[in-house]
Image (cartoon, rainbow, N blue to C red; front, side, top):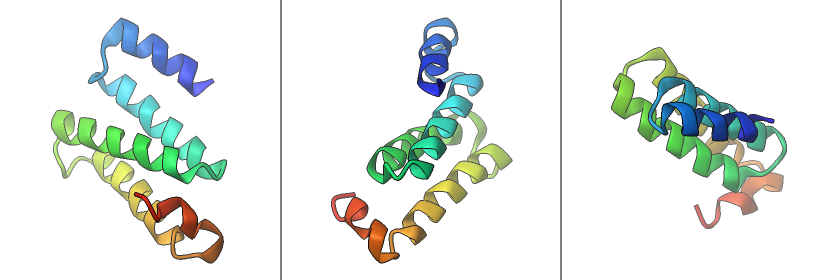
Length: 88
């Protein structure tokens, strides 16, 4: 569902619009919760780059995405999730 919304935002608003970037962040979160950690990493990195550019590094939305990335990397220390980060 988020990916469909994202396609609409990208088409209507552009890839760097804040609503688009929020949806990118949500897609990353969903992939993480589904156990698709490599995909989550890619999407969080995309959201972070866009938010840093649009909002700056200290904005709460940028920090929220950064927290998502940190949590993703910290969870990689758990044995059952480690394989997802060996190539990241």
